[in-house]
Length: 294
Image (tube, rainbow, N blue to C red; front, side, top):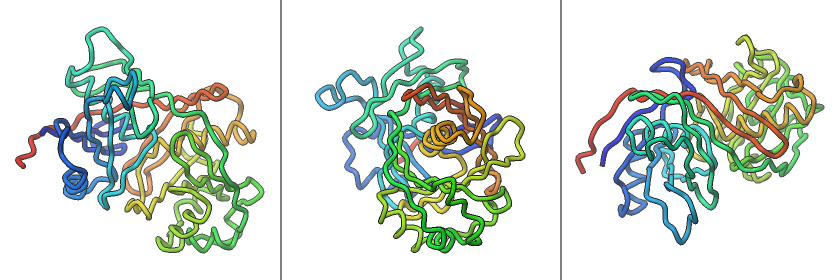
């Protein structure tokens, strides 16, 4: 098996959100994939596999991704973008064909790759249609689980669970300083998320320092073994939908979200929203390649 480190949503190497992409794992049991994810110890390790015609229909590739705790994650986020960057940079895509179908879980996602070089590419992925799954207005419970002051939680902006492939709780906070000050209680947050059918939690404010960004975000997923993620594509899609639907940002087709500054991995995620069509896009850079000797 071969592997590569890819920095996703990155303008330069060693920024954005790193993902390990592994090729050649077909036929290995889940226990091996989970052990490799633990070995690499990134928020996600993605395994590029041949598509199964009977299961995946017209997909070109199947992608499976695991966290260091062995939990499998779904939806099209930075793992899917990183895998697409690696496929394009490694010349594994059909020459002259910009788009392909990537199967993840029970969904097929359309991926378009442009601006390809031997080290990087720009990728756009159409996520699943948005679904609003639940709201949660208990200010004190949110404040306790997130480690913020109770008055920092803007329940009037409706904390809610939204999915474009993965269900995440979106919690509006008063200021960027409140977002940066959050210190989640992993146990309390895991229990809260489980009780409302959410996988992870994105806290956000509408006063980002980055020019052109609509929101400043941090993302926590303790049940999956992710203390904090530098750039979360599966949360960016739902957040962009919420911001536009609720009139929290000026109407625009593209919503830019800033994330990762608190963990020293500044990232900008762009999402196009056109009705139920939600497209995540960003740049990725291959920063290392190697062999697995197992």
